[in-house]
Image (cartoon, rainbow, N blue to C red; front, top):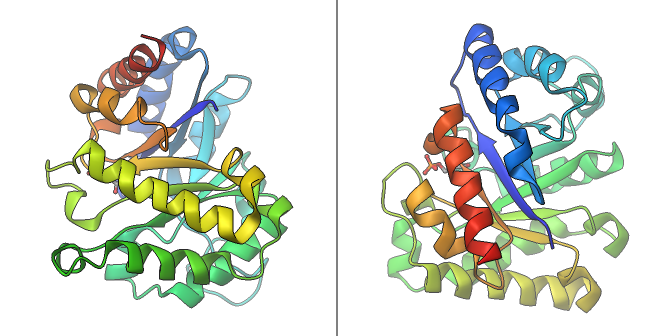
Amino acid sequence: MELIIAANWKMHKTVAETVDFCRAILQNEALFKDVEVLICPPFTALPAASDLLRGSSIKLGAQNMHWEREGAFTGEISAPLLLDLGVEYVIIGHSERRQLFGEDDSRVQIKMKAALENGLKPILCVGETEAEREEDATEKVIKNQLFVALEGLSAEQADSLVVAYEPVWAIGTGKAALPRDAETASSYINEVIRNKFGKEAVNKIRIQYGGSVKEDNIGSFAVLSAIQGALVGGASLEADTFSALIQAARKAVLS
Ligand code: 13P
């Protein structure tokens, strides 16, 4: 399966900074062969990124969405509004949304359904906190998150799904998971997917690792059989650093 490497910029970059980044990354586009690369800027920078990336192989994702198509939802952005800008992917259930904005599994579930019904490809984030890890509850947490998020979806709908395994304690800490732990968690995600949608689904759904991914460590995740990419925060903010990270992943997979 093709690697999928996504930049989650979180709440970073003005329009001018986005333009600079997109121009710079487009210079390196030819080096990303066989890797699906996408950028998830803040909502305000989506139009500029969309204009610059149109016609290139670099795709666009959003960091969140509301589940209704339109209505009196002050401050929210819906799937049709994202599609209007050429957005193809949407991150759903990021741990920062769960922890800082009270997004629970039932919210994640209706967003997943709305994304897929509207033709957006979800990147569903799952992962345990430090305390849950210490309690040896990683699998239980992942299973619960997946069960609720995937409830009511058909195997066909699930085909376009990406699951990001992001242990909360590894995000922004510089302390990435050990590759063997990421592989164990991702294999478990595959097991849950197989039980729910059948074995064909495991060959279609891609799993990313996220949490302190950098040029230096991406290779050790990209080569793992249960992992097909990364969701990158801090190391995706500079075009040079992000390009180097993508090339390091490619090199690791090809060698
Ligand atoms: P960092 O790469 O900065 O640890 O962030 C990971 C993340 O949350 C991506 O969604």
